[in-house]
Length: 430
Image 1 (cartoon, rainbow, N blue to C red):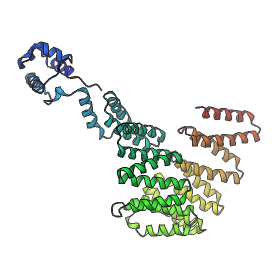
Image 2 (cartoon, helix red, strand yellow):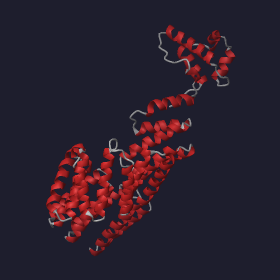
Image 3 (cartoon, rainbow, N blue to C red):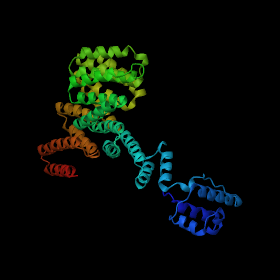
Image 4 (spheres, helix red, strand yellow):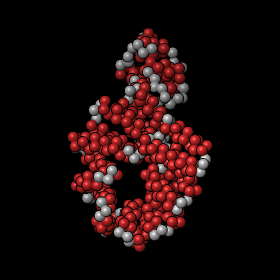
């Protein structure tokens, strides 16, 4: 979209209304002045602008046209108009294409404050669509602007966003770096919300890295700055993470105790939260060899998630398979894992795609079921090949390709092995 200069606006209005330059001299200016203004060689005063607007409106009434412009219309520069247009649009529910159009306008007219907001807005849409690397790029573009204007709170906010992107692509050390930066800036500026978010995120990464004591330390810090009445659900989320940490320490009785305490507030909890709690409680019971209670809570989790939280149902199915693996009921286990694997792909849940793949791989190897093992490997390669080309996924892709190549050699299928390795080389060199 183009925005007119002051001179272009006057010339445009004259043409629309059929007015000659000479006719504008009635407001007390010369034709030469009008010509110079139209060629952007002279500026308008507020008084002259108002007189011109009055003349244009009178002419529009004569010809039956409604001219909807205010008295400051002629004094607005293209940058002013671009800013007004973008501000008016920015809070709408915008599509990616509409955001890109606004980004183009902001770049042309140096509207950096608005540009940073648009980068974040686009990043949020990409993140919601599981396009984490693309989201990271746009969040980083926003960070560059925040750095240039030294906006500490915005920088702290965006570091959490950058960290979440890296967390979703399983790049834990890089995500920790961003979360730590967010936390440090939150201390400098006393930004409570950023501080809360970064503490929780740091705890989560420590849990992923199996640094459980560090995770628990940060969870306690998080809970201590929460307000029970305002942050009730945040506290519950933190306690769930705390319970999961004790599971990682093999202290399952503490895990079960924490979940029982949370369930005392069952009537205050959302169904999606309950589905997660039942799932995790089932896992804890499984670890203490209480398969009856484990299956009971997995079923409760599955029932809730089928109705209220379908995007997380695959996680319950995958974990539930462990009950049947423990009891060597492999058909039921593989049915659950296959369904969980397929759903994790649909919902682009990379962590659980990999988890269910590993569990299925082990079952097929133990059962010496080469046919299903090969099909699983080929399906996983297809999935990984369509994902963003990040280091952690490339490593998994390489390992699976090598395993398939070895199976091809064992089957004396040298041509297939050769094709497999050539495809791997192309993937590595992308």
